[in-house]
Image (cartoon, rainbow, N blue to C red; front, side):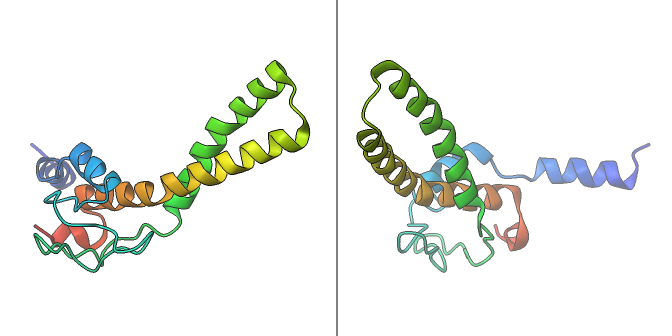
Length: 135
């Protein structure tokens, strides 16, 4: 005999939307449901709804998540690279700082909107917030 909690968990798992396509569509700045409409209307501003399938994006709660993930990824990529470059070639400190400062800023600017889209896609796929009621 199943308990109420087990029944709720199995029902919830059966109705979840596919996560990988939603993450990929969000990464590409596309609607997590249809993959056609734009997700972001500016650099980081989430549109109010999808122009194609009319999915309401107002339920997203990306907040500081994209910034934290960007810092995590940039730090974990650039710190070992900085060490390898310094040990291998011993460049002048100003040259090293300039190259890695530009690299960190460039990589951060590239990743930030993509990670925001991926987080909104993940929230939609998992039915977080008000996305649970959406079709």
